[in-house]
Length: 622
Image 1 (cartoon, helix red, strand yellow):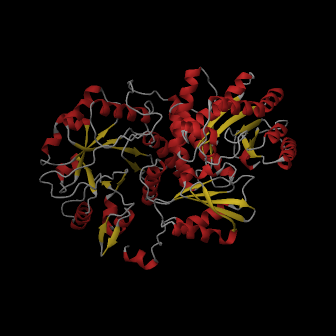
Image 2: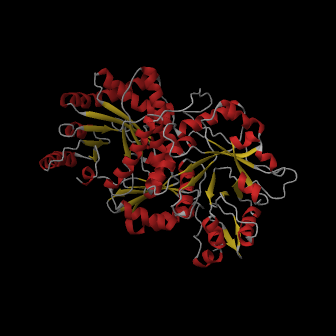
Image 3: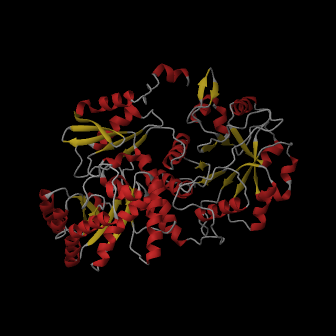
């Protein structure tokens, strides 16, 4: 009822067994009596008889092709002859047909919901643990539906890794196009987590597909109270509708983007040139760069500025760390007589942080070794030739310029390109303009690094900023297009913008700067308080970059859910926890009160633990 009150269109309920299936009739009746007519979906795993029972009262049945008729995956590589494989398909048809017939009889809908974490051994042996395997798993069930003339179904291709999820849906649609099918899509990133992390991962996966014009229903899966999922869903849906209404922009033919297999276009990182007096190699990071816009006011509080850039301080001097901002954009330079402001910038440049400033600023009050921001118009006017020889140039490009204007890029030695289409642009899609720019660069063998530069309007809601960045920049980064991010928002907290930028890169599987969590939303199967335990584990392990931890309420989808995680903390029985390393259970039945400590010990046993910095150490570098 709380979910319906928040404006959801559909509610999905976990139905584990006979007791729960019987309860569904009471749930439906009591909702109707209270004037709640929201459609209900039964989530079924391993239980064909339960699906048959609940189809008599619920509006839709979700079946998981990985475990509806197949046993739970053991991750065994099986050898199949064509005959063996055909027998398996006949078994699936035998088990699945009664449900299809019953859905036809009662006018029910169905979701064929593949999950990357729970593919069967048969599918993985044949197609691998891959987007291709996910699509084929769903198609086995769809073909049975078609054979029985049942078409009231939708597909989903969920994964906790947004890159895999996007590839799987795109492959599904491409295969449907070949077959002449046109079934709806339900989009979701499974086990996205909580807070901004969960919203960012969901925006990267769901938002990317919405930008492609794909998707009919969406679910943002958060480790939070279920009604909290509706607001980010609505924000994403609004972005998708807006994208559908936009004119795309200049037409072009795409030849170089990889839709189905990830291959990153890596821009040429800055190199040292003869005569360089400072080291420019650190102004971008090989795994993805974070740039931030800094104001003159921030320069006045030097130590605070260094800290907000996440630089380590040793005796007042800044040093770069794992998650330090790589370069800053200074739209206005301090006056030549502002010794403190200029010294602060010199110290940043000395530790290989880039300082970018507009051409007009650098010509009127030059800052030694600054990189200069120029537009294509300024380049064509030749104004940049007034700069000293050897000055590094950063070129701002919209992506919808004429071919003639873009030709200027062939004759310039740019350190990087900032792709910046105004956020208020009403006619042209940012994603389309960026893809056109990348196509132009590829066609002309130009390997400049490209930074996605998004200027958000003032008073933008934080969730709109996170979801907007995840959708507009994430949709390009998951295709390997882009080398970093520069987010600006006039009234947003600097630290929030920095953290959002690093979260975006990590969500796109680029730069890993903190512990990665895969945590499910709680459902009827959850065997402990997921939100409380997640917070507890995060508090003790959030300082382990490069380590991925799965926090799962149960193991219904199988150990494959841990495919993306190094360590797993999983509800095994009420009050008992099982611990996993990868897909392998290593400890069973640990009492809840000892389980977090046991997880930490497991991480230590695998030499992945480092002690968090002590308060004294924190003070020493701040």
